[in-house]
Image (cartoon, rainbow, N blue to C red; front, side, top):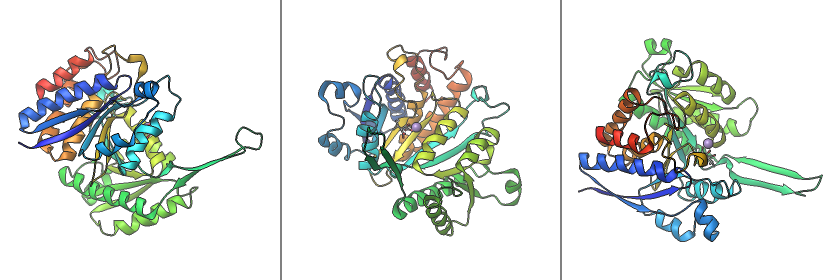
Length: 367
Ligand code: IPM
Ligand code: MN
């Protein structure tokens, strides 16, 4: 039987509670679809840091490289200064394992949970391809005269031709593949009539960031030549946030840099129903990828059994899709949609009408 070794970093806060439900659902799917998942736990996060001073030891990083995938719960602890765990664990894994794509689907499963009036599931259905290894996240820059009246802080955005191109190529391939699966997605009405093509929107700021996004824009059109079936579209990042609220149905696949991707995907999460449902994948197409609910550790809900595990379950679904278990992934998504539409009163913590474990049970029973 096909067996996948999966590293599990349940992490901080509500991470362990939601990860438990994701594993429950993944196990159910593996039994039904005839493959085996072998989960290996890693103790990383705020508690370990407070106990030992370690964030991500080199030896653990080396071990993680042998897994095709990592399932992550959440990283972030109220007693640890912001930045230490984020940079020391989450970003370090993303960078060291060259997970250069952060894939974040924005899909509304039930119009009751969309904060925008009159938007239906078919209107909120797009995917953000966020560059995940460069930009402002690269950590380039520094201080001069820190703590004095003359202090200077420089934080630079790094955009390499290599990094931008590999991200764009992934995005074009992804748009092509997504379109083949569902050709009517994300097209403006006039385009739908004219040409049934996939659409890739570059989200940038070419009017102000005239170096970084000049490179992005040139590379976008150069690489796009090889994808005549994918319509190229451009939107400034500020306008993108406006369209997310006004006309989310205009989007199909969006590609953007690390910082803009971080910001617009929080907005994306809100229009799909909130952090309770939003998941993402940190992808290295040739190596170890990591899947996570994008919501964070939610310390105030920790241990109460009220947090929504669907985001973690959807992260598990993305993981199976990535591993090539498409049928199992689809079954999980179908089960999630059914639970969202037929059972839950809300997607928010404490208001679902079910406990965390009950939501996991419901999905698992339908897979
Ligand atoms: C995310 C998070 C992280 C990011 C933080 C926790 C470092 O906000 O995954 O979007 O900024 O990438
Ligand atoms: Mn974020």
